[in-house]
Image (tube, rainbow, N blue to C red; front, side, top):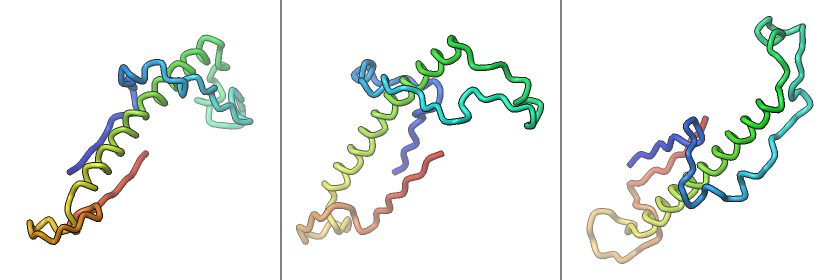
Length: 113
């Protein structure tokens, strides 16, 4: 089995039941270089305009969508774990009745960008 959720990349549309979840109210992280323009960097960066209030509002909105869409990824991981717990230790079909979780032939790997 393989799962590759699209979240939090655009379009980061949260599930309807997470549309108003309070996690989306977290403020933007503004480190020391937030909205800092430096002329000693590549010309592309030096020529960028400062982040306007409208830009920041759009960034905040997109962050809210991303955070809320990641809650669905949490649901996916939880569902896979619950399903794996239903599997017997031996997927060969024997009747050892051991149900410690993952099949002996299972490999769980997680990665993210």
